[in-house]
Amino acid sequence: MTNQWLIAALAACLALVASPARANWLSSDDLERHCGAYLGDAASIEAAACIALVQGYVAAAAAGGTAVEAHAESFAERAARTRAGSRLRSLREERASRRAFCVESWPPAAVIEAVAAYLSRIERAEDEPPEQLVHRALVAQFPCSDD
Image (tube, rainbow, N blue to C red; front, side, top):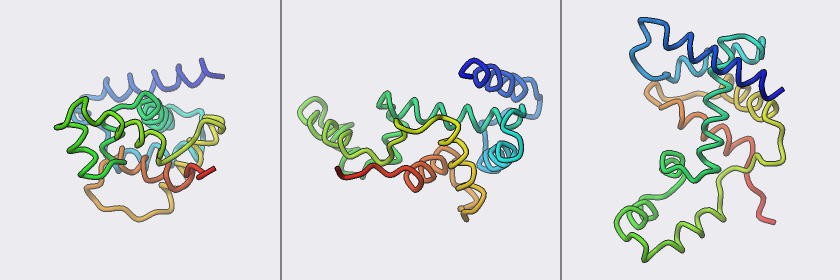
């Protein structure tokens, strides 16, 4: 099943790259359209862009990617992380223990379906970046328990 998703994601990426009008990154409107397509037919090429973005975002979060952290950390945490260096590594470790979303126990298809459904029913700012929308959906749908 994983290979099937990888092939679909690769096909979607190739379709996006092959399009001469695609000079920009994926927009929020594109994300909504692709995730809407996922809800209609998860195996479609258009849905593969939703799959790829959500899986990429989750993978970046698991790896501790700074782009993902930027959406989840406060200004003070970011300032400490970027300006204080190694003196405040414990702050980052503490931040990791307070993750905003937890998807480890969920199958990827369930996570992507939940994100797509969330995106189909929320209101958003016109200029809200797609990665921020995915983050909001993950936090809303898969909050970490305090256990």
